[in-house]
Length: 97
Image (cartoon, rainbow, N blue to C red; front, top):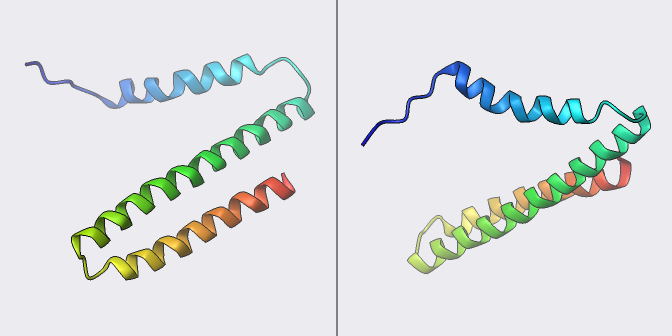
């Protein structure tokens, strides 16, 4: 089996190519249109992030409780605080952006 080799230039190309094409495709239109598109993308990304954080975090806390982990209650409190902060950032973004 061959080992996959990655160097810095290939990783950089892998990440910059989609970003460059995205920026190039948005050359047409006014500044207001671009800002509205970016704010919509930001809001959608934050919604997806909060949802993923809530589902994955709740699943991990549930597994800890089921295993009888002593730290599960502390982790649950940290999870709720983190979810509240992340959700608050999402709400503030939706209100002001």
